[in-house]
Image 1 (tube, each protein chain N blue to C red):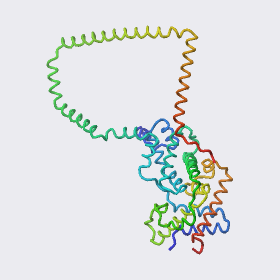
Image 2: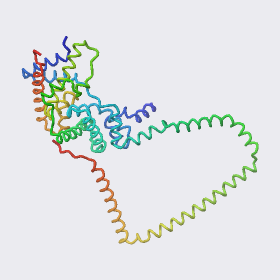
Image 3: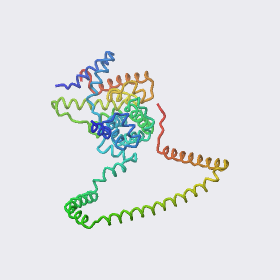
Length: 207
Length: 178
């Protein structure tokens, strides 16, 4: 019993998110490392799909965690840690996109981009399906990634948070600082735009 | 043969076409499951720790017993302990044989005398510190001097606080909320 309590107190992996933050604030480097490990995928994944470049995404994701570390005392434990990190990721990414002129992937470039080393190059292969189904799944994922990449940044961010990372409307509002109505509108318009682009890429009912 | 994702796609596009928003949302959620949560390159956490200035502390703490010389010293200590166990009974027997009651009394008296000398020295040093403290505190009994000293302490504390904030803010990028 005591051993279990002792090991739980010393193992950052057993801590809840607020406990992890409290431990990191108290100076535990192990706790902060665990925090990074726990959220590196969603944060990096969101940023990569926003900026569409692996090196930039890693740099920005690192910046997000460093900012989080320096601002741990501003975290409100009554809120989800992921929302707080997404908010920092949002600010960092939007700041970067503003500096770079809010670039998105143009339609023509995407069509010629089949063999490029972009996002589609790092999508995993599926080994449990038939070759035809796996190939179709890969093509579909690539097309969806391209369609997401062509969305306006604010639509893209809302779509990724809601559909990919399972964030609620409220969490998106907190992360982006947008009112609820705007978030819902952005998601609705983004969905329509995605459907339009996917149909244009040949994924319509007859595709 | 069509993949399950294609079925979700078909349902989504059909729902969008007919303006069935809830169904479209559900089908798109299903479709997004085909997209992986992309992982950062290996060693990402290490690079974050380094950038946050936490890498060295962790590396030193974790790497202490990974150093070859530390392991060598530890192995040497263990070997010395093992060898000493072999010789311990004989050494103890020799020591017990040379000891006598008179010798023990002499040693105890010598220890007490030494402790007394050290205690007297410590008392003298304490007395000197007390007189020094009294001499320094005498001017502070004057309200004017105490106020000046207090003011100086306050100014220096504020200056250090301002300097610390300034250093921290230098590497912080503020982004306006959108």
